Image 1 (cartoon, helix red, strand yellow):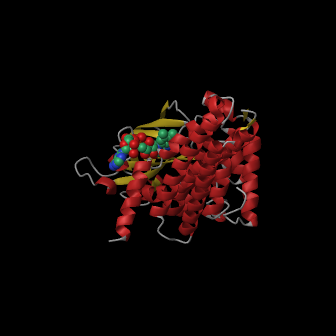
Image 2: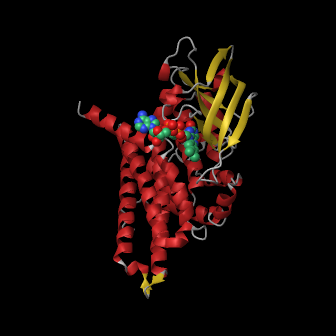
Image 3: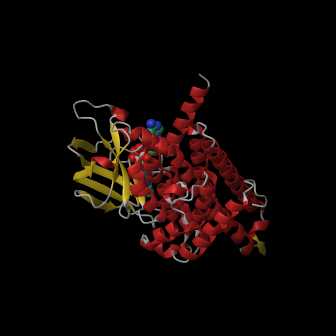
Length: 388
Ligand SMILES: Cc1cc2nc3c(=O)[nH]c(=O)nc-3n(C[C@H](O)[C@H](O)[C@H](O)COP(=O)(O)OP(=O)(O)OC[C@H]3O[C@@H](n4cnc5c(N)ncnc54)[C@H](O)[C@@H]3O)c2cc1C
């Protein structure tokens, strides 16, 4: 885009350029192969930790960078332009587990986990979904029973991003009893580490897109968790998870903006190179209009995203704004990647060019951390609250 609508500060430009360089040198050369083989490169985590990308929102006292949300999202967009898989690892780690420990953890938990998470030694994951509890996440059935100074967990978590490489998995499990179900107010949040007895990694999903990001099932078979790993109050885990997802959605929106921008950049370059009827295809108005619509939606998504991020940092209620940003950006990612494949014609449909991968990667942004239908429900509900 020609003008910088975000009016980045000098520090933000520096971090953007650092993220751009990292993605260009450490990810871009390998991503086609990782995507093809559904391969996750573990060394990427330490490299991101060394550069500070895994502690962007962690305060300096816990060895993070203590940055504002917008700056974090600028870095995330740059990574997502090159690889949506690495971007989701970064988004989940920064927005969910680290933030939950920071907001709801004890001093002991913060000291135990946050410095290692900021340094990239402990990768974070978030386990809410279950095979039969997706959009209706409060219907989860993994059970936690308090026994002495431990909690014993039994159940299965599905779709856990980075779950087979994580060192700290924030897991939501029922703390109410089967006889006295309390719905969303009967769920606790636990910090699970993979060394605990009874922790098993199950099926790894074979996905349409985001193939370099491992998504796994986790099973807990009498998993014994020290009581010191319970986060906050035993019945409030679902509330903590929902509050954290509100912010997590900004990360997914930034990922979607990155995917959409990558599609726009690739299609703009291709339209100048590709000749048909003795002229570059960008001279056809049909192509120009597609590029214009893509560019407009990318700019609108990014603007909405950063307006929501700034409102969050001012301490405002951003429930509706974060859902709007996630909804609009993810639909923009689908729109832009679809248009890009069209502009590439047959070459867009094969793996020789990146738009085929972008098209596959875009879809999940409309599904995880709340589907587009769920975002519309949240937006409508907040609208109703406002006018009551
Ligand atoms: C690649 C990937 C990574 C993921 N990573 C994680 C992770 O790290 N941690 C985690 O906990 N989860 C994760 N998820 C799970 C994800 O959050 C869920 O897939 C998502 O919340 C939707 O749940 P579901 O798949 O069970 O779909 P369902 O809830 O079964 O929905 C099916 C369809 O019904 C619609 N629907 C459902 N309820 C309503 C309603 N009330 N009104 C209108 N429409 C409705 C949905 O929008 C959707 O279109 C991941 C998923 C994927 C695909």
